[in-house]
Image (cartoon, rainbow over all chains, first blue to last red; front, side):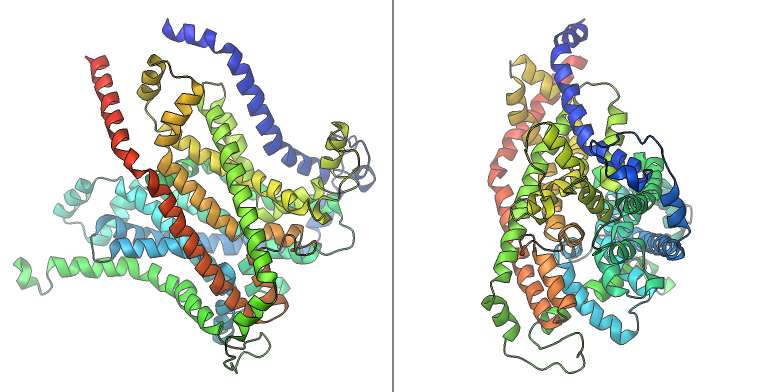
Length: 283
Length: 321
């Protein structure tokens, strides 16, 4: 009875809430709709004022043009290779280190954890300047391995932290039981801990993938051969600085760079939100 | 000692295992962060250019002297601080507002939560290009809508106007970062027990009082973490500025990230770029320690909150009884 009473009382403020939410949605979602619509517009329609909110004659010429551009497909493939490898390596290292930090007590543990996290504050350009010089002398410049290594360390600190929080939530008793049953240390890790923390591993993996897919600075600096470039520096080098932008074409590129990551997100959404928020709440 | 017969004690095995666990992560961190940061500070005292990297003559702090002589560093610092302050505070206020909306009893909560998160996964470079199209002077949607609403009477050149370029970049950053901020705050809000609000309602507290005396204090740790993440990320922000304005017009959007990148990789003066980075590092350390101080001021509240929590527990027990 009480709740019914409340809901009646709240009907009016609720309208305000929906209106507020609608404004936020308009700001956050409409630009994405505009990107989609623009990519299907012919250049003659593009510059109409007032604009066509829904394209009267949608065209796929921009997509055809883009997909027949070989170099673009190369960028795309490079991005996938680099982001996927970065994710796998980060996961492996973060899982090991996170487990170490979660289960063992040792000297300087808090200090180490803190210094790992504080690397996030370092100016990236400082790192890049020295990294560039180092890579040059080791022959790692213009290699995908070099880029993957640099991107791994960019996402590793937060990944270790997030996954540690997940491991903290798994009762130690399980491991003790396995130990009594004669399970080795690595056996415990691979057969008990990792399967139990699948949500955490998923969320850290997606976080890393998104972060490396988003990178511009590292890939712009460490790679300057066109056939090794990833999508973001590829876009910035090829489409920027032109006298007049071909907006429909650019929006098509943007859309194709966004779609894979959005699909990934919608698929694993529930893990990601849980993982990120668990990390932040406990931190 | 018990396992003397086995050769290695369990304890030593544990040590070895721990070492195997954390060494790989530390090795890569050392190679791509630890060594570079030391090397970069070292390089800041030498005359190093991208074209001549083998010989590195000591140049009597000329890199630092050069930075302090031309006013660009202070301009870049001012732009960076203005940007960070604006984006973090606007983002926090709007993010809190959005989180409160999503935390109230509305329908389709889950759908809304998924929808608003999407901009956050859009690559930064894509958001930059998308908003450049929206801000386009002749055919951009922003000018069209603002003119239709009679908010402006002539189209604006958003990204090339001295006063509008930075706000335009801030709007773009807000679009991409607001989702993360509000979802994090929302997660904190969902952790606050319903009893607290119930108790407040019984005491006759209105919405603002509930927000100020329950929600915000309970969210303190959460707020500290998300705003710190946001400050750090935005201090480093590179792609938005690089793509949208390139630091222009007239250095009005040249942040420390743009200034140091241009110095090192466009003017090819690595030594000076490293020196800018070193100064930036010092500023970052100052800001983060200041930030920790700021949040520890209200620490004595802690005991009061503890009491309140106990109270709500006893209320729960009463209800259960």
